[in-house]
Length: 114
Image: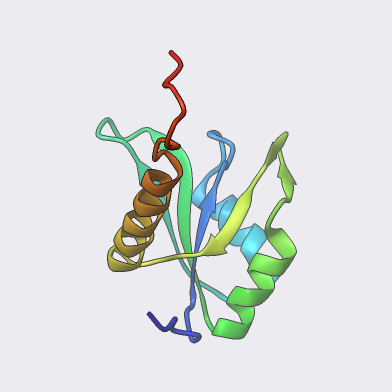
C-alpha cells in the first residue's frame, strides 16, 4: 500500500492528563500553523492523554514530528507520529498478527513447556 506523502494530521500520545487544547495548540505552533486540535476522551468525557493535531501543510507536520516527538511535557515524554486511517491501521494489525502467528509456530521435535 502506497502512503500519502501529503498528510497533515499527527497523532499525539502520552500527553499529561491536565493539559488542555490551548496548551497543545501553543506547543505545536512552534512548528507552524495549527489548523485544529481534537482531544480523545472516554465515554465519561475524561481526557485519555491522546490527541489529533492538524497542521497547515505536510512540511509543518513533518517538522512537528521531528521536533516534538520525545518532548518532556510535565514529566511525560510525548509521542508524535503521523496519524493513520482506520484502513491503514487494520492492514498493519493483520500483518502484525500474521507475523506473530508465524513466530509462535512450534519447532518440530521440541516439546511444549508450560
